[in-house]
Image (cartoon, rainbow, N blue to C red; front, side):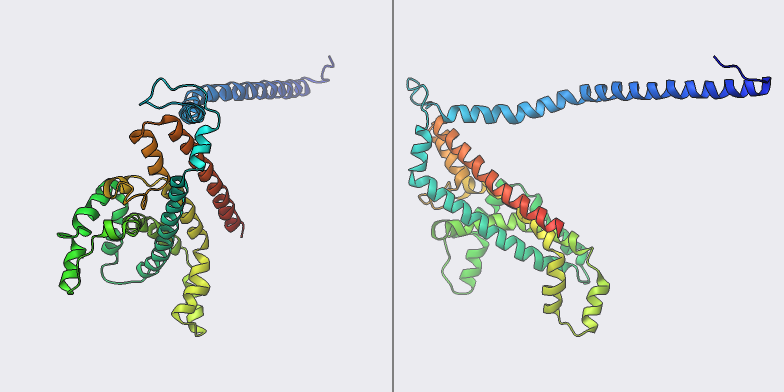
Length: 321
């Protein structure tokens, strides 16, 4: 090994060599620590990830498995592989298509009411008035009421044909009281669900309104733009992304509406308020046909995924714009 010419230069060479070796050692230590840390992190995450996978995959796998089986709890002797019989029966059953139509009507009308109402309320609550804070809290509060409780409140206190608030208002105006759940069953469910989800749309859209540029609105007013022009050309384009998020989240949850139907109409009269989720409940827990209910669940999963794909693409497109 080459030696330095003088003691000072030798000490300098020795110092640089020690720094060089220390750097190599620290680099190896970091690399090793990173590997060990990565393995340690993976080992810590593995139980939670495994539990989540089992929680999702096992029920899905069992649902798909039972959908190809003859499995009726009332007829335990009839078992075995059914192939596509459960799917063929469901797809040729008018009840399935009626339930799908009811589901689409319910989801569509609730989305229209909540998005339009939420947008208008967000614009209203963005304005300054005396009790704005209290009004915001009261408007958002229904979202925190449990679906079963809200359905019972509307059934027994609001829409009751004899003792309900709406019946009292109708009689006060000299009109006959309306039995909502017999005469307008699906409309009643739409009103209840919209009352629950309108605060959610309001909360998201009101949050989006906070980022609206007031200078842009003031400049539009100075140029002579009226309230409608400001709403359609400034406010509404600004809320486009938030509206897309509201539609995506609400549609995913609205496809599985069950408690409101179970508490108020039980899917009736006939199949007037039977959506896809309630039809699966009828097959599983009233007819005890696990195979048929599982086939309905698989159809519901396929429908939900198709809807989710389009919604995610729509939201992604709005985010890119």
